[in-house]
Image (cartoon, rainbow, N blue to C red; front, top):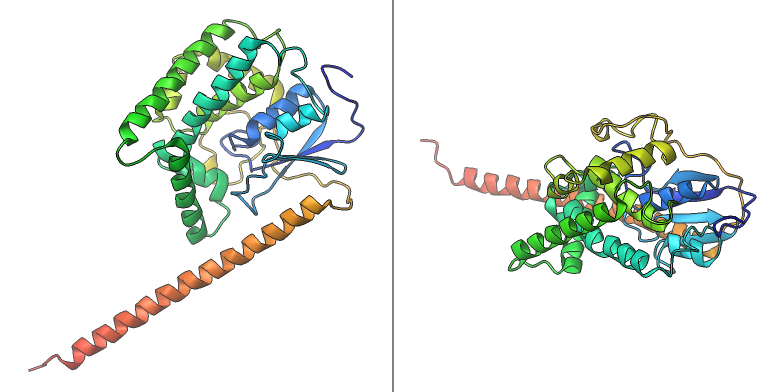
Length: 322
């Protein structure tokens, strides 16, 4: 076993949201997990789930009967470490500076990404990543529900919106400055080797550079630190595969090499765990609710059209053609 990794005789499977913007998965939660597994050099298969886009179980990792969900045990990476499946932090997890730096990335920069993705920009990246495969009424409803949820999570109200925006961007700027100083010209942040901290930072930087629009305040702030950009692009070329072709023309707007296939690989059939069966039942339920919502939407439109016809008819009856 090397770097806390146990011998794995079969491929792990990472289930994530789809690729776009020149990234193997454009989801800011999934990308660090993909990078972490790439750092470990353990073979794994990447598959995509677009059936249930707002599920907090995604990403998740499967290995035989083992499943690590995003919403359990503090996330996929923490679960992989605790279960001794993939642990890259064995010699640094108790170092105070490493712990504080990791907390900085997960809080201040995590809040900044949430704000940019759901509040600060026009919503196009969020629609492309999460909802582009869904019918128009459904993706609109889910998007606005998520925006409302993120505002509540970040404590944003109509009264404090401007001050919270300044605070979020100010904290992100301080975080970038601290990370830039810590990194210097090194290849990694601690012990000259990759850890989960590098996976989190690299995922954040690549998402900010490639998925956010050029008008993004966060992206502009990040570009003020060339060593962070250089660090990210170097590791991207060494560890990250990118798509041969993007899933839709609208997502092919960012620069980047093309060497990834977005078509998921087939894996041998096995008996599904109870958690997987539950997830599939929830996915089917979600599809049914989509169909019902569309039928309701169409019926409302039809009802509005009938009402309009009736009103016009009443007006015609009382109109004089003299």
